[in-house]
Amino acid sequence: MKNGSVKQRVIIAGGGTAGWMTAAAISKVLQKVADVTVVESDAIGTVGVGEATIPTLLTYNRLLGIDEATFMRETNATFKLGIAFENWTDVQHRYIHSFGITGKDHWTAGFQHFWRRGKEIGVAGEFGDYCLELIAAEEGKFAHLPDLGLNYAYHLDSSAYARFLRKMAEAHGTIRREGRIAKVNLTDLGDIASLTMDDGETIEGDLFIDCTGFRALLIGDALGVSYDDWSHWLPCDRAIAVQTASTKDPAPYTRSVAHDSGWQWRIPLQHRMGNGIVFSSRYKSEDDAKELLLSTVEGETLTEPRVIRFETGTRRAHWHKNCIAIGLSSSFIEPLESTSIHLIQRSIMRLMQMFPQNGIKKSDVAEFNQQTSYELEHIRDFIILHYNLTNRGDTPFWRYLRHMDIPSTLQHRLDLFRESGRTFRANDELFAENSWTQVMLGQGLEPQGHHPVADVMSEQEVTQFLSHIQENVQRTVASLPTHKKYVESYCGAKNAS
Image (cartoon, rainbow, N blue to C red):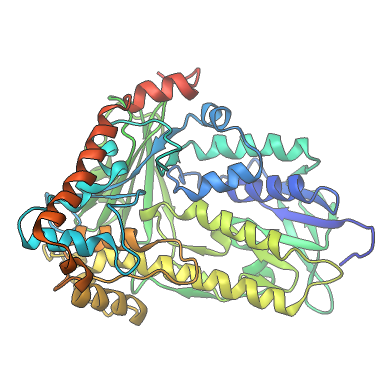
């Protein structure tokens, strides 16, 4: 590492969403201490299907000073209030995991305890009736409501987002080097010294960021960091993506539709629909999956179906020597809860917080790896929850998932909620109490009781409490414009149909 007044030479191997998100952040915030070079080849494609996001992306964009309307216009983005899960608990069953806060908590107990009391005395509606974002999603409504704290994310064209960030990064000094990496050169101590390009040029650096996707050319091939396979919990290992023309107004939520051996996504953008199927090759062939996908999409297909092969799991170290893996080179968890871009963002923010000066510190490396592993395991458990907690047993795929052994960390959460209705959030975990509650209830897990604080209220007080919340939700949603109309007026793209 260079020290003193000499800038750190940061080499980002690979572009795409991960590479350009990293470059934009470092070049904008650390422009005076870091020179950034992105090495990517136009001949190498990117996965490019991370088109649904979660609300944490708003934080990244705001930290970089990105104007929301401009960003949405450039990426043909729409708003997202949650994810509709269809056929997961049972065939024909549907629920929404929204980004909102349901009801009103007490400091001793979450809203689900008061709702549960209301159910017992026959005065409560569905749990989602008390969530503004969920009802707005169902009715196709949206508007910015800063006073009420409406929580939202985006559906976006991830390739366009990478191009948008590339412009920003290059405006702050990032250099792009076109070409393939032919060789990764190591020092005698095992650090990365340089990259040799296919034309013979050598690119030296101090800190190397591996954004080469599933290939993991630096962290895996060159440095030999092994990969832990999680496919015994998450057996889906294939995806096929295709784009179609829009046939209806864009809904402000993602659709996740379970099938006999996995699930399908539908992501509405301004100018088209993103579609895909995720499945396990142990239970369904690629040809059968492609046929199922094409037989269920709506609208004219705009692209050829593209097969993506993956293995769910994680690197055993995400920062090793002078190399940090960000994106698919670091880990992969299927996009069921739209966490791919979030994980890129979190790695970038950790890197920014622990950016090395005067040499890499072992304590920083250990902390980075510990935080990353904890977050990945938390998200892993949340995804497993959707598969394991189900009534479905109609195919070998679902029977395996329903009866498989699950991580003890997830089993504890299920037991806690089943026995007491309690959920807790620790260590700034991504999915907060309301997310766990919505999905566990949606997947059919009913708590056996409620917190005694709910019994302090009389039946009349419980009725009034629930009615007041529901009436406020309904009144607010009724005042909102349609999602389509709001998008057109706020950030309508020129090429949107």
